[in-house]
Image 1 (cartoon, rainbow, N blue to C red):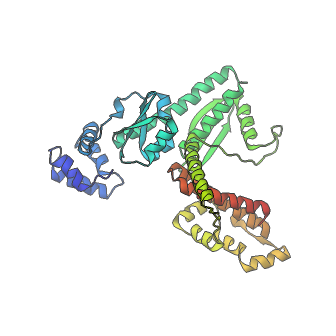
Image 2: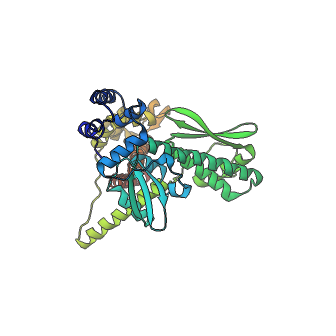
Image 3: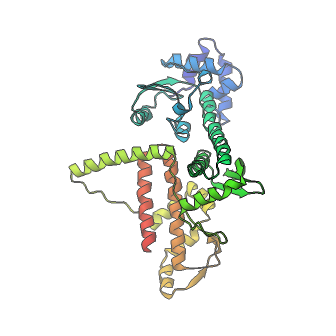
Length: 385
């Protein structure tokens, strides 16, 4: 929903809520900060958040909901995963057998609302709310996840062998980390307890702790998920696993639905789609982009090594099986084959980051394309191509 300067003047200045000079001051401040004019209007005390919301809703012909006055049931809130709610600026605040009521800052989001209807099987009733209302409602997700974990830990203290409870605890930690956009999860055993920390924006933050007697069960669960040896306790092991949150399931299910429609169309019209494989030059250009540079820094990918690995010199050296120094990739010496494999792995990580970002933003088509590219890259890696 577009609210420009002219609209603000019509909604706020003409009825006398604020003066023209006050609006000019708000717009000027907004131009040099990351805050919107609506946020500044409330923060500077020109108008209350609820009055601003009602004024905008009336002006556009929408119903207004003050989320601060709504007591939202947990099961209703969770009908829309937090990452989706945050990206789409929507909150499910009421539901019954036939209808789900949604509050949003963008009632014109006609692409998203039908998806909610398909997922829930209910009619979607849309109301306008303010940015501040959405932000306060979003806190309910985080608060409840931590509360759930603490309550579950209390239950597990009484019954440490409760396997389903350990599984639920690990899942809560993973979902909490995903919603917090954490890059790392650190589990540190201490003398009497274990502390779980998330690295968010480069800073480790403690999120929850549990009794030390639960530590072995948590580690055991993570080993099972990573397909590691559970009887090995003296040596380090490397493993990996995939975990889909509700948000990812929601988005990927929609991607699959659209894919099936496309496949049916292709079959009906005799179309055989071909996977588009990007040339190394194109991938290099991607990695040299501003976004690529940020990801490269995180993954430690040296573009010069990447270019070298796919140069003519690389192919010549591959025949002689020479080992070349490459401290940039974390090892003293790597064979040509090892360099190629590491680069493929790092490109796959970059693609996975982009796919997860697309999933969060409900960009289903991009997520599907990236998933296909990742599949091809993994196949190449397995075959050593």
